[in-house]
Image (cartoon, rainbow, N blue to C red; front, side):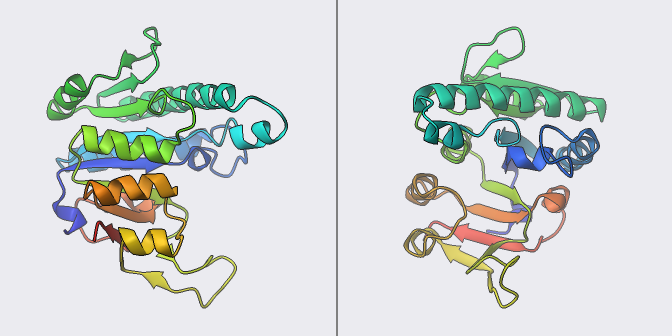
Length: 236
């Protein structure tokens, strides 16, 4: 499957991406740069769903290691995704594209409750959908929530925007001889423990035949117009 032929994309973005050069929180300049790229993809006729992480605000694993209850830490992380989602929502609408933010948690002052059919209707009406609050359950990750939402919303491909242009056999920042994969199967990703997403997310995508594409976050605006340098993870 050529990524450019996909109609409906789910973009999985890390919370750390929003911190840009700030090191913590949200870099407003980068936020608007990211928003213009999302708008460009939507203006190219693509339907866009976004699932965003929370590492720029809160690190649940770190807190859990220091004694915080895992469930409570995960709920805090879910709320942090709402903060990031609201910021991205505002930025995208400032650049001219209508957005609906939909949460797995009931927070009706700032978002709609995530309902699959309603989300699909928003997409068909040309709105960008930002899905926050993970799946609403602790002990799951934003990676797993992204795969779940991509499947629920019948996305053609899940795109993970990262700092590097694909999946490598080792860290390209540390090893100049690192080799980038053009294509890898879900089974290979699991067996080689490639750090694409967490293992349960990769396994679910593999079982449900959802393609994954890993590329630089700066290239997401080009997904609909040409083949972007990256790694395609095919179910088998």
